Image 1 (cartoon, helix red, strand yellow):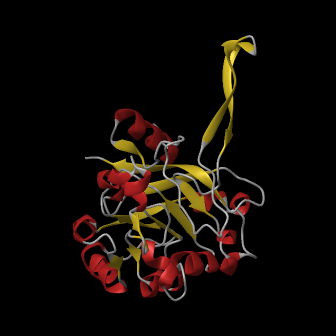
Image 2 (spheres, rainbow, N blue to C red; image 1 turned 180 degrees about the vertical axis):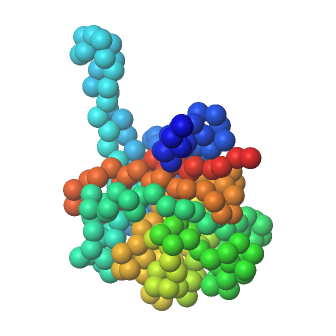
Length: 262
């Protein structure tokens, strides 16, 4: 008798045959990657920079390599609980358990609403309506907001979409942020925008409620995702790979999704 193939053997076979597709949810990281801009009285994150060490020359005849400089929260990145004051005594990015970096995804699509209103806010009622059609949010999984905002990633100005009143980008309402953090079974929120909070989050109560509530509840954030249009509403598995920076509040991350294709 032949032994049944192990789960991992079956997974490798499915990946090789293409019945499971790997979708890259990560925005390329370069000096043109949009970064968040805070009011000038606050510290600012660094734009990504490469510094060439050698490139097959007299500095190193057979190799090419670089130093790089980047903020922890530049490009597609992972927010650890200690990123916010509400989670200051919780895990840094190096202490996040590895098994919590992999989980099922629920993809909620609000592209039509955001096309009409860039300040669109997701309410608890929107999530409940999605659950009526797709089942409950996944235990230990990710709530991913598809808004079409990744189409703006070619331009810092278009991506931040700011005027004299501040940025205008979609996100969760304060009530929904609190519900996701305190009542839902997911471990984190993933968005296509520059940060997990809506552009108007500075004026909410509490200010920046996604950061405040999620980090304070030992949950996580993923930002500047792309290609969410390639994921089904349910069934995908997300793999987030931040650098384990000791004492770090987050890290640029390669975020992948496994999607079963018929």
